Structures are given as C-alpha cells and as structure tokens.
Image (cartoon, rainbow, N blue to C red; front, side, top):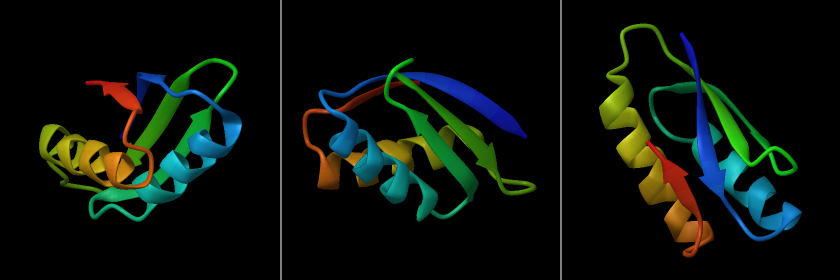
Length: 72
C-alpha cells in the first residue's frame, strides 16, 4: 500500500537525507521525497502497521535532519 504525506524540509539535500533514512526503515518497501512539492510517498511492506512504521520513519528522519517534519 502507498500513502503520501506532507513534509516540511528546508533544502533538497535534506530531502535526500530524509528519503534515504525513510527507505531504510523497517516496514518501508520504498520511499520517495519530492522536495519541490514537499511530499513524501511511502510504499509499505505487506502487513506493516502504517502508523507504527511512520513513527519510526519520523524518528529516523529526525536523526539525519533534526528540523524536518512529516505530517502524519
């Protein structure tokens, strides 16, 4: 299943860091960040708890870019 989230990030490089961190999160099959649209599209693994996975995605993104935000 795919879902799109609104994000807040300051620069394209930071968006790339967020995309990489989100993609490495358990339960995420694929994550794509569009800096110009300020959106993140997340494709979840089958059977993943989307709410729990997104909490972990936000936590991992905050590790690489502490002032980013994902509106869950």
